[in-house]
Length: 179
Image 1 (cartoon, one colour):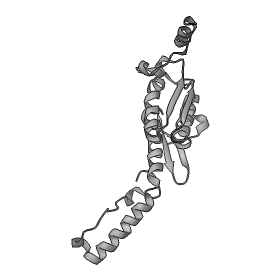
Image 2 (cartoon, helix red, strand yellow):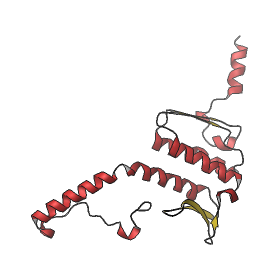
Image 3 (cartoon, rainbow, N blue to C red):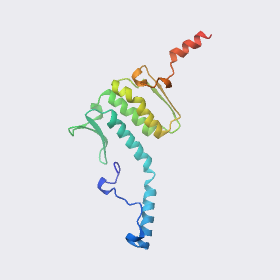
Image 4 (tube, rainbow, N blue to C red):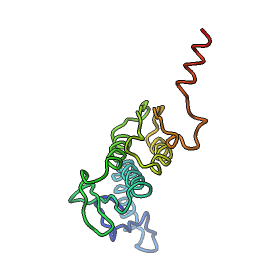
């Protein structure tokens, strides 16, 4: 497991034992035990998926020369490429904004919610703006929001997704002309 209470060297948990390996009575008991243990761990699968998405979004696309780490002792923390720990307050305002947006959307927002995001481009590097909708789509896929509405002035946020935009200025002028 990448995250959690099971150390990486302890990740081998066989899903089933055969009668040939242990004998019928032992394999039946052991298979029942393993099945029960896996069933007890299943509620944590959703949390694991959320943590995995959060870490991947930050490490794959956003954090330059640093990465987010997770430990039992410290929870989430940031580490530079040379191994130095970095406090959240020492990250750029753009990094901090993205972390807060992603964390809130992944861990706090409820399924079937309507999500409103106002000007996410503030403090964001242009490269991050171009990746923003892709990241939001990945979060949407996991959390199944009803709708996500983003107000932006940035063509980089929209990137190549003009077909899903609604221009308030243009549509307001059409409405005014029709009156």
